Image (cartoon, rainbow, N blue to C red; front, side, top):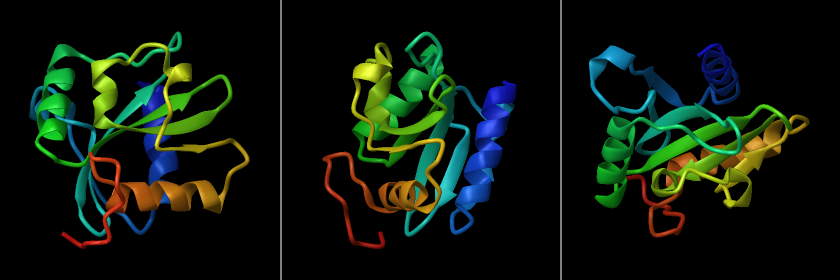
Length: 139
């Protein structure tokens, strides 16, 4: 849990143009950790990669899959503690959260990455759509 808290602080400090609302774990079963707004609203679940996989509860899988399948922008930001890399995945990752090193993230932020990686993350959160396109529409 402390690792996720540190991930939240790192995200908040590097994405000041995003309006974040942190969702309390007690507010509902499976709801992602954060609701963000940057050009449009989106949901973000924070995870730590452990033993090359992401651990989701059954409620998280159901919530993310249901909303992602309906076209809602849902993402998972995962921290890989060994190379200290952040990886942004679409919500579809809940269908197969194993062997993360073999999955292509939407973007990655390495330990030395300052602005370029975070700018790519902003672009993805603000415009990426479940069909893989980047939308320029505001809504």
